[in-house]
Length: 80
Image 1: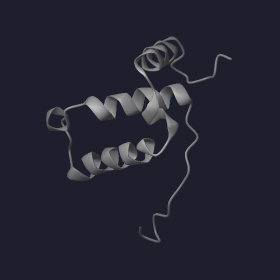
Image 2: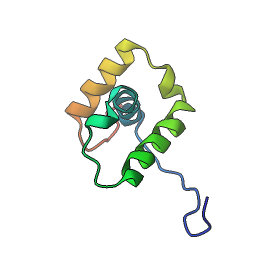
Image 3: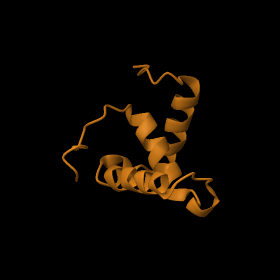
């Protein structure tokens, strides 16, 4: 890591994290129109970090439920 760009923490709704992890795990990165290789690498870095959380263990039902929640509440406010 570079001192100019230290590690940072980002608060993320778990449903958003599940949806992002699922997409990043299944997307064909060769089909994504990146403007720069750094964009691809940043998404791969995000996937690596999400792999270290419990969202990586989400089953099909949790993934479907997360997609439904995020679609219903795009602002990311926890409906609970």
